[in-house]
Image (cartoon, rainbow, N blue to C red; front, side, top):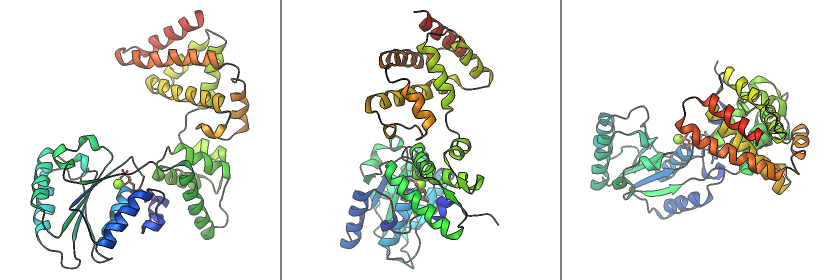
Length: 343
Ligand SMILES: Nc1ncnc2c1ncn2[C@@H]1O[C@H](COP(=O)(O)OP(=O)(O)OP(=O)(O)O)[C@@H](O)[C@H]1O
Ligand SMILES: [Mg+2]
């Protein structure tokens, strides 16, 4: 039997169980208490921060647990027909089993132009007992005419602490079901950091690690999750600090192993920023690095190299710009770093 993914198993059923997003929860809860609903809502925010979950909880509260909201996934039904058939006609009929008919239109940025027009008409007519909750990660794709007719809520990324505490809760519950599993504190820390505010990403990664091993430590996380290989960045940086022209070998190896050099450059910028954060704040928690002694000792070696690292950052930043107009990235990268080493 297929197992339920942890992210679905632990989807909150009430606002009490939702991590963070406190101000949104308090406004929506107040609307339920005072029965002052809007006709249409727009939930905006990055992936996996609780938009769909909150839409379902809110819909359930509006209808006092009766009936079910009608969910439309615009990403898979972006045609106008679907909106017309499923929503326009439907929204004019009063719900039989609940006070309001509630439509959750998920990933609404994928709706076609004509679907938006149809929806707009509907929002203008405002069938009395219908409520629309639109969710999106891309608000810039929503027509201004729609934006002006909805109440917007911006969902924040979840803090690292918020993610970690949710992971700890999930881990505790899973451990009650299977006492053999263990996940180290460092592993939970690192999974939280890697998620960059997306709670679903964090839970999915924990799930992946647990299906790889019942005993998850930092090494398992680094192995299982497709993280950047820090070793390459550390040795590349050491070469650049020493102005060692052998650095073009790294570019060669990356190219030959099929790595996308543009992406490498972006990841390397992020790496250097984290190195600088470590030097400035002298604290591994201010970075996305894992709390690993090996990593810390390598970082400590950069502590008196601030000026040089800033120079490298300038080169990498310019390279990021130039890469946009150049099709032979291997040559561009090799020449840029050779020139840097020859300065
Ligand atoms: N704020 C949160 N509190 C608790 N769990 C959360 C929260 N946000 C996300 N999750 C977890 O992540 C899963 C996905 O959340 P949800 O579907 O609400 O994300 P979303 O914001 O709609 O993302 P997407 O933009 O990708 O659709 C949930 O099932 C839950 O396990
Ligand atoms: Mg969603």
